[in-house]
Length: 166
Image 1 (cartoon, rainbow, N blue to C red):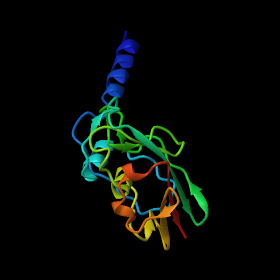
Image 2: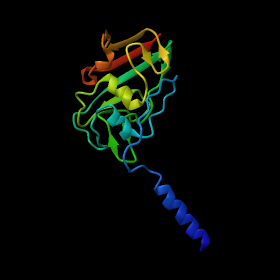
Image 3: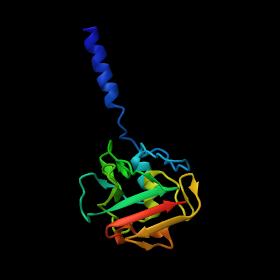
Image 4: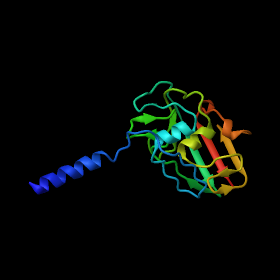
Protein backbone atom coordinates (compact mmCIF):
# COMPACT_ATOMS: atom_id res chain seq x y z
CA UNK A 1 0.00 0.00 0.00
CA UNK A 2 2.83 2.41 0.88
CA UNK A 3 4.38 1.79 -2.57
CA UNK A 4 1.06 2.58 -4.27
CA UNK A 5 0.75 5.87 -2.35
CA UNK A 6 4.33 6.80 -3.27
CA UNK A 7 3.66 6.01 -6.94
CA UNK A 8 0.47 8.07 -6.88
CA UNK A 9 2.34 10.99 -5.33
CA UNK A 10 5.03 10.84 -8.06
CA UNK A 11 2.38 10.79 -10.79
CA UNK A 12 0.54 13.76 -9.27
CA UNK A 13 3.74 15.79 -8.89
CA UNK A 14 4.82 14.97 -12.44
CA UNK A 15 1.43 16.11 -13.71
CA UNK A 16 1.94 19.46 -11.99
CA UNK A 17 5.27 19.97 -13.75
CA UNK A 18 3.55 21.25 -16.92
CA UNK A 19 3.09 25.03 -16.88
CA UNK A 20 -0.52 26.14 -17.00
CA UNK A 21 -0.10 29.35 -15.04
CA UNK A 22 0.80 32.74 -16.48
CA UNK A 23 3.97 33.29 -18.47
CA UNK A 24 7.36 33.71 -16.85
CA UNK A 25 10.19 35.98 -17.94
CA UNK A 26 11.15 35.87 -21.62
CA UNK A 27 14.72 35.04 -22.58
CA UNK A 28 16.92 36.76 -25.17
CA UNK A 29 20.26 35.03 -25.60
CA UNK A 30 23.37 36.71 -26.92
CA UNK A 31 25.31 33.46 -26.81
CA UNK A 32 26.80 31.22 -29.50
CA UNK A 33 24.59 28.42 -30.88
CA UNK A 34 23.08 25.97 -30.30
CA UNK A 35 19.92 27.70 -29.13
CA UNK A 36 17.15 25.43 -27.89
CA UNK A 37 13.56 26.60 -28.04
CA UNK A 38 12.67 28.57 -24.89
CA UNK A 39 10.88 26.58 -22.20
CA UNK A 40 8.12 29.19 -21.74
CA UNK A 41 6.72 29.74 -25.21
CA UNK A 42 3.93 32.02 -24.02
CA UNK A 43 6.43 34.45 -22.45
CA UNK A 44 8.26 34.64 -25.80
CA UNK A 45 5.04 35.09 -27.81
CA UNK A 46 3.99 37.96 -25.57
CA UNK A 47 7.50 39.51 -25.57
CA UNK A 48 7.36 39.53 -29.39
CA UNK A 49 4.07 41.48 -29.21
CA UNK A 50 2.18 38.63 -30.87
CA UNK A 51 -1.08 36.94 -30.06
CA UNK A 52 -1.07 33.21 -29.35
CA UNK A 53 -3.53 30.83 -30.93
CA UNK A 54 -4.38 27.20 -30.29
CA UNK A 55 -1.89 24.57 -31.51
CA UNK A 56 -4.50 23.23 -33.93
CA UNK A 57 -5.14 26.64 -35.58
CA UNK A 58 -4.09 26.25 -39.22
CA UNK A 59 -5.72 29.41 -40.58
CA UNK A 60 -3.60 31.64 -42.84
CA UNK A 61 -1.16 28.75 -43.30
CA UNK A 62 2.11 29.27 -45.20
CA UNK A 63 5.60 27.91 -44.84
CA UNK A 64 9.13 28.54 -46.07
CA UNK A 65 12.64 27.26 -45.45
CA UNK A 66 15.06 29.24 -43.26
CA UNK A 67 18.80 28.57 -43.42
CA UNK A 68 21.25 30.13 -40.98
CA UNK A 69 25.04 30.17 -41.27
CA UNK A 70 27.61 31.68 -38.96
CA UNK A 71 31.15 31.89 -40.32
CA UNK A 72 30.21 29.35 -42.99
CA UNK A 73 28.80 26.80 -40.54
CA UNK A 74 25.14 25.79 -40.64
CA UNK A 75 23.06 26.57 -37.56
CA UNK A 76 20.02 24.29 -37.37
CA UNK A 77 16.57 25.49 -36.47
CA UNK A 78 15.18 23.53 -33.55
CA UNK A 79 11.72 22.08 -32.92
CA UNK A 80 9.03 24.08 -31.14
CA UNK A 81 10.28 27.65 -31.63
CA UNK A 82 7.22 29.84 -31.03
CA UNK A 83 5.26 27.05 -29.34
CA UNK A 84 4.02 26.53 -25.82
CA UNK A 85 3.05 22.87 -25.81
CA UNK A 86 2.05 22.61 -22.10
CA UNK A 87 -0.53 25.36 -22.66
CA UNK A 88 -1.38 24.08 -26.20
CA UNK A 89 -0.54 27.48 -27.77
CA UNK A 90 1.48 28.65 -30.74
CA UNK A 91 2.74 31.94 -32.04
CA UNK A 92 1.95 32.94 -35.63
CA UNK A 93 5.48 31.84 -36.67
CA UNK A 94 6.86 28.57 -35.34
CA UNK A 95 8.73 25.37 -36.09
CA UNK A 96 7.49 21.82 -35.71
CA UNK A 97 10.83 20.04 -36.13
CA UNK A 98 14.46 20.59 -37.12
CA UNK A 99 13.86 20.50 -40.90
CA UNK A 100 14.40 24.26 -41.34
CA UNK A 101 10.75 24.88 -42.20
CA UNK A 102 9.08 27.86 -40.53
CA UNK A 103 5.32 27.70 -40.34
CA UNK A 104 3.06 30.76 -40.43
CA UNK A 105 -0.34 29.93 -39.00
CA UNK A 106 -3.08 31.50 -36.95
CA UNK A 107 -3.77 35.08 -35.89
CA UNK A 108 -1.15 37.56 -37.03
CA UNK A 109 0.56 35.14 -39.44
CA UNK A 110 0.58 37.69 -42.25
CA UNK A 111 2.14 40.41 -40.07
CA UNK A 112 4.89 38.67 -38.06
CA UNK A 113 8.42 39.95 -38.78
CA UNK A 114 11.83 38.32 -38.78
CA UNK A 115 12.75 40.32 -35.69
CA UNK A 116 9.71 38.90 -33.89
CA UNK A 117 10.66 35.36 -34.97
CA UNK A 118 14.00 35.69 -33.19
CA UNK A 119 12.23 36.97 -30.07
CA UNK A 120 10.08 33.83 -30.26
CA UNK A 121 13.31 31.81 -30.41
CA UNK A 122 14.87 33.87 -27.63
CA UNK A 123 17.92 34.80 -29.72
CA UNK A 124 19.42 38.28 -30.12
CA UNK A 125 18.98 39.51 -33.69
CA UNK A 126 19.69 42.92 -35.18
CA UNK A 127 21.32 44.42 -38.26
CA UNK A 128 24.78 43.23 -37.18
CA UNK A 129 24.35 40.31 -34.78
CA UNK A 130 22.84 36.88 -34.43
CA UNK A 131 23.30 35.56 -30.90
CA UNK A 132 26.94 36.22 -29.98
CA UNK A 133 28.08 36.50 -33.62
CA UNK A 134 28.42 40.05 -34.82
CA UNK A 135 29.86 41.32 -38.07
CA UNK A 136 28.55 41.35 -41.59
CA UNK A 137 24.96 40.07 -41.41
CA UNK A 138 23.26 39.33 -44.73
CA UNK A 139 19.60 38.39 -45.17
CA UNK A 140 18.25 37.16 -48.52
CA UNK A 141 14.65 36.45 -49.40
CA UNK A 142 14.28 34.18 -52.40
CA UNK A 143 17.76 35.30 -53.51
CA UNK A 144 17.29 39.08 -53.03
CA UNK A 145 19.13 40.93 -50.27
CA UNK A 146 17.01 42.64 -47.61
CA UNK A 147 18.07 46.05 -46.23
CA UNK A 148 15.97 46.08 -43.02
CA UNK A 149 15.96 42.43 -41.93
CA UNK A 150 14.36 42.93 -38.50
CA UNK A 151 11.29 44.49 -40.19
CA UNK A 152 10.96 41.83 -42.90
CA UNK A 153 7.41 40.44 -42.94
CA UNK A 154 7.77 36.67 -43.07
CA UNK A 155 4.63 36.34 -45.19
CA UNK A 156 6.58 37.98 -48.03
CA UNK A 157 8.94 34.98 -48.24
CA UNK A 158 7.83 32.69 -51.06
CA UNK A 159 10.17 29.74 -50.50
CA UNK A 160 13.54 30.56 -48.93
CA UNK A 161 15.03 32.89 -46.33
CA UNK A 162 18.81 32.83 -45.83
CA UNK A 163 20.72 34.53 -43.02
CA UNK A 164 24.51 34.60 -42.89
CA UNK A 165 26.89 36.22 -40.43
CA UNK A 166 30.62 36.55 -41.15
